[in-house]
Image (cartoon, rainbow over all chains, first blue to last red; front, side, top):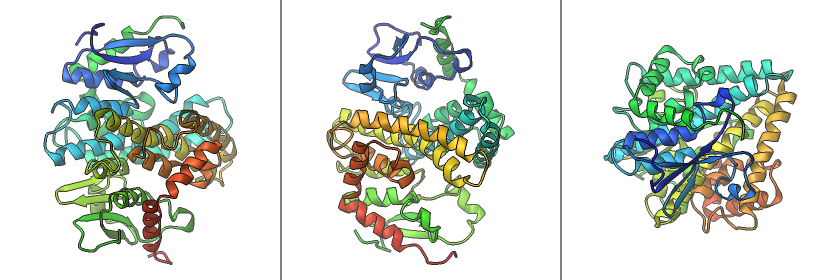
Length: 217
Length: 217
């Protein structure tokens, strides 16, 4: 779905990030969910320092912010759920299926993203610190154990439950970074590749990359 | 609400944990949500090593697991949302109010719990490691910044939005640990105290503590 400046849905994203973050910023997850539903959106690109007022939209100063009429949301999990609730594309109609999908949505953001970000922070964001190697080893092992459990659950299934849901979307988006995925078992790597092969993901990724300016603004 | 062995709702909890974890294990959050709605539940207490089959209920081997008829859930966020959806006690009826509450539910579990657990892990779980002090300082600063932003949002409000919701329940439960709270500004500390003063929280806490055996099983 092309970006449509007249869409009633607005997604806030960054107008520039360093190369290593391109394709990883969390508005990608919201774009992907919208693409799965075939919904157009417009973007608001943040350039330079955030004004103080932005923290009233996004308490941590991050992206994405999502606006659709009176609904103004932050947190990619809440936004993804809001989008998923629009139809059955990402959320089964049955109560049991719906709740299981939501369980995996939270699992990605709490049980996987926490250990993943701790490891990435120790290993990369603090690579110049004397404690980085020791902390990276410990947090990396914790992440690998969590990803091994995910692989145990997945087995030879295509998706986490019996069809692709918003839980898969968020899980794939959470673990697809190279530094995280190299800690994962083979079946989890293949699962991520299935997710990334979806046309909606490819459209979302291309749209995020196209929005970055070449120089910091 | 007393625990009722005949309740159709089952919450899985640990039958023993070390002293420092008592009152912090995550089934507390589910018990609290149920208490806010005045719903009885029965408990299943895990004793000793988890059987391999338990990982089919809870992929990470943790607690809580929640069962209510055909709905079987893991992840405290998904369970809290499932309970909150039963009436308006924890989730406003209006779409905007409902979505904002869900945004804070995700905020607690993704934007706050991640940095909090990274800090606690570095400072306490790995206190005997040479890298602990350096990593604790860095992760502690990151946590303090996040909690300061939470305080900026909260200001002099009683709750995160205009009434107590499942988002407040999860936020209070996420940051009430002493090691986390000592990094928070005064208004966040007072906010946590308001949450902990709720009778439903007190009943949930007492019920969790009462379920622990005095010795490892």
